[in-house]
Length: 98
Image (cartoon, rainbow, N blue to C red; front, top):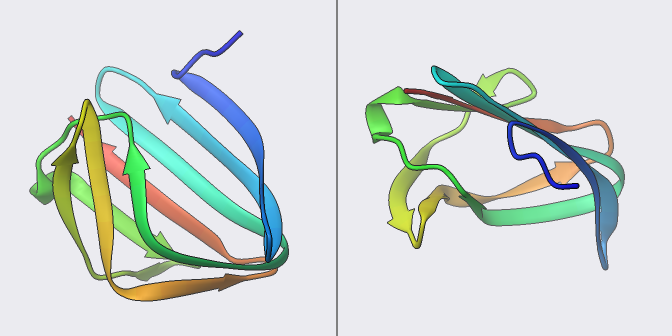
């Protein structure tokens, strides 16, 4: 059964695979996308949550990543200034405060 407040899944694309997890509470949403094998080129990340841009942090392996935030359907889209190339062991973390 899908529970968005505590969710974890496997993802796979033609160039690699890994895991995605999210935790949602009344005060924050935290997401992590990790590459376990291969690579993942990422220009945009769509999430089913709505927040204002001043309350979002995006980090790749602990380093801040430039992005813009826009509303996308019932959630938001995080669009990266430059496409990110995630490799084995890389973790992209998104933290959104309510």
